[in-house]
Length: 103
Image 1 (tube, rainbow, N blue to C red):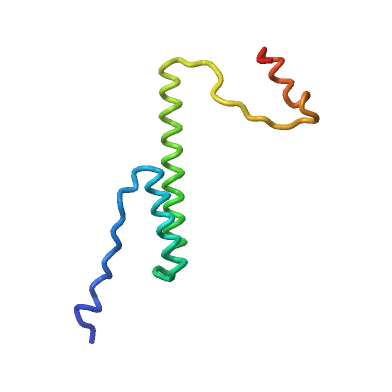
Image 2: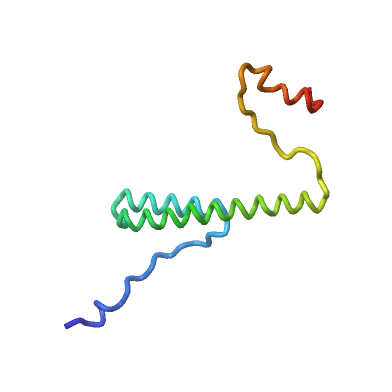
């Protein structure tokens, strides 16, 4: 026969607010440490880690979206960033800068 104690769920651990990337990283570190020390099951840690990484990606995307919206409101039409993709030697790879008048 089951008693009331056996039916009660285990209390969930207290988690701080996960409203910043730093807070999410801190929680991910805590989950990792607890899995390494055996305080939580590694399968549970893996699931929690997946959720925390997903949350961090969502936060990063949201931040990027807000920055782009701000630039669009300002009607900014300049460069936001450049990616260097090597092609042949260095001069050939950076030849786009000359074509755009940046060199």
